Structures are given as structure tokens and as C-alpha cells.
Amino acid sequence: LVSPLRRALQTALGVVAYASRFADGSSEPGAVQQVCDTRDVRPPAGPPPIMQVVPQMREAQKSASEIVVDDPMEVWAMLQAESTRLDLELFCGRTFMQDVARQMWASYLQARQHVWFSTPPTDAVMMAEMVRSFKEDVLAQVPERRILMVGHSAWARFAFA
Image 1 (cartoon, rainbow, N blue to C red):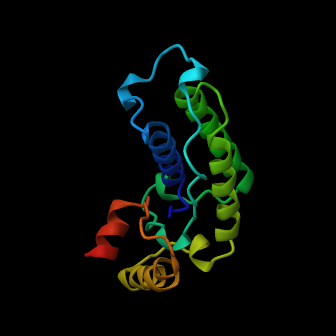
Image 2: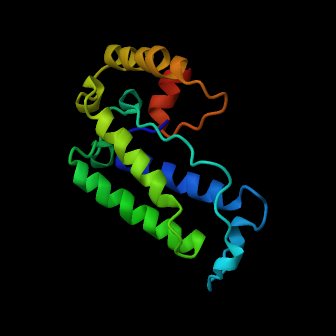
């Protein structure tokens, strides 16, 4: 589950890439070789994780970094660039992260239809309603037992206090 903010989308993509690359314990994150040998890079085990962009996880807008990017093509370009960078850095140029980026972008397009996408919380009442919606409409509906949420510290403090 990931917030629709740019920094959260990039962070989630990076976390999935590093977890996929080093999950089998074949090498340590600090041991990525400068010269890639594709024979040393195995595809991530299993299907890519489900990436869901959740508008209810957005933060109150206090700075430029908290603005939701409203242009889908700008988001797609950012996700392509980041997944390509991660593929080069971690997977010797193989395109393992492209499917994850496509799934994240499709979820982003779907999230754009939700009211919370374009309406940041402006007070505690709106934030409480957003958190309630997240817990009841999103989190309670997730069938997976283990999830990773990439959001924001103020939102998380409010949501799980």
C-alpha cells in the first residue's frame, strides 16, 4: 500500500527492488558489484508483489514535496526512470522492475478517481475521516496477512496513535 505522493511511489519501488534482489540471501545489499554479471542475477522468486496506490494515505499539503502529481504521464515517466535505474543497479539491466512499475501506474490511474486523491486534508476532522476511510475501506479489505505501507510520518502518527 503506497501513498500517491511522488516520494512515496519512488520509495515503494526501491524497497520492492531491494527486497526482491536480496531476499534469497545470495548477496548482501552493500555487495552489489560495479561490473554486472547477469549470470549472478536470478529473477525475483514468485510473482511481483501487489502494489496498490491508496489515496487515503496522502499527507496534509505543507510543502511542494507533498503535492500529488496530477499528470499521469509525468508519474509514468518517473516510474519508468526509477524502475530502469533500479534494474540497472540491482539486476544488471534486466527488466524485473518494469512489471512492478506498470502495476503501480495502473493503480495510480485508478486512485485518481477517488475523492481523497485531489482533496488533501486541511484540518484534524478531515484527517480523521481520511484515516477512518483507510482503515475501513482499504486495510480491512486487504486479504494478505503481511503488508508494507509506504506513507508519511505525520499521517502514520495520526493514523496509528
